Image 1 (cartoon, rainbow, N blue to C red):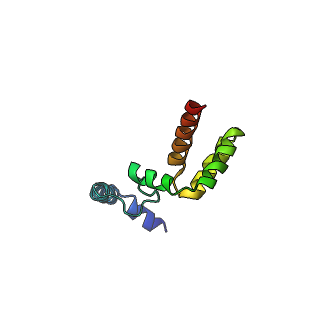
Image 2 (image 1 turned 120 degrees about the vertical axis):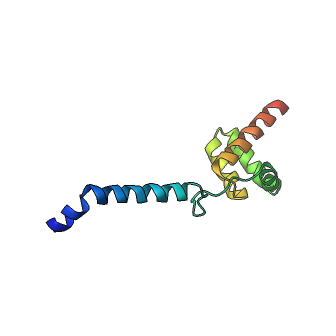
Image 3 (image 1 turned 60 degrees about the vertical axis):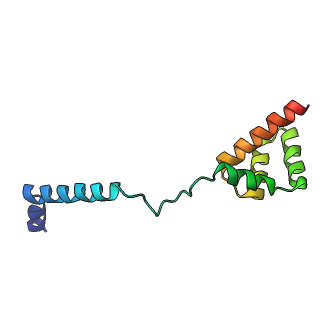
Length: 104
């Protein structure tokens, strides 16, 4: 085992491993990762289309939660109804609150 460690810890071997590592990073760094865990964000048109699919009864349920000052619950209801992400749902709920405040 010590012979193996002595060979790996030689400066030439360490330098070669370092160069190979940097070369691999340089090659992989230019490519977009296809296995990314986060999905691409929806376009504004896709968000609008998703919001238009929400039924009136669901909007009434969301408005009831907003009236009860339960914004997080309203966001959850919208996310369940549309499949949108947290950011888009939060922005849509805040826009709905602003529009409702203007009407009142």
